[in-house]
Length: 339
DNA sequence: AACGACCGCAACCGCGTCGTA
DNA sequence: ATACGACGCGGTTGCGGTCGT
Image 1: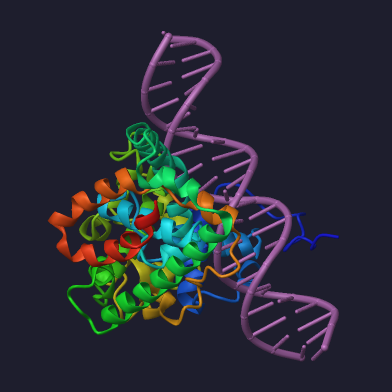
Image 2: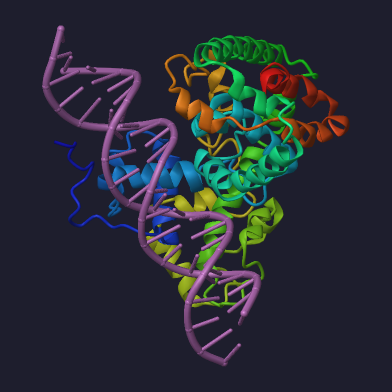
């Protein structure tokens, strides 16, 4: 009945990726570029299914991924976008190009949902009299509610499109532009980030000694320079096996291309590690669907949060970052009317 | 110090969509 | 037009780490 598995389960490795596998995958993608995932396991010898390879790349190894704590601004963006788009994590992630959909999804499920629940709780208690927006929502008849919702959705869509076209014209007032501005600098952050990713896996690899200086996700703040300072299989490498592993595990030319001193992740030799404009604003063509038509009301309902207290919390930031106002207003201004 | 509960993240699974023959 | 393969997405799970008792 169901679709057969994407790969035969026999001989397919599951579970956490090893640094060796990471390097093989990165090496392959460096040479061939991402895509054609079906061919990746057979061409690399990885005992992983294509899906697993793609996931590992997109969620972990892909350059430009920022890890570690979410900033308050990112948090607010996510909340706004979630309220606007629902659980379309990929669409949301497209506005936070440094974050993966998986990351955002996890962050939402583990942090923000609780946070909003709290806010919702205090909001409800503060509006017990039923005079405010959130409780008045229930006063809508179903038909009214749906019509109103559709109207607001249309408005939100328009506003979002406008915001995006403003961004296209490089308006400094556009908050989305601000949030992604660092991505668009060619060859800087994206390469640094890719270096960070590889650095991270190398650090994991090299932490034979349990006393790694950075034990938590803060390793993600590894700097470009620290990456550069990593010496693979050279003098500072305490374990003689490290260099051996790398040369054994990496396809030809990989270490020289990626890790030779002063030559790592330059735009010249790592062409694929470029942030494509598509990656930054894939929604410009509306493919990822800022589309609400046909969306089940239940899912929308579930995804919507009361916005009175939340609103306050969100707007707190607006003073510090006035350029965000437009976007926030777009997301909240109209829909908040009936909440 | 030992144990259990809880939390966060990486990875898996199943389904939907898209492209192509 | 349709069947099929590949890819993408969202929900869920499992495991390792952390915290509290």
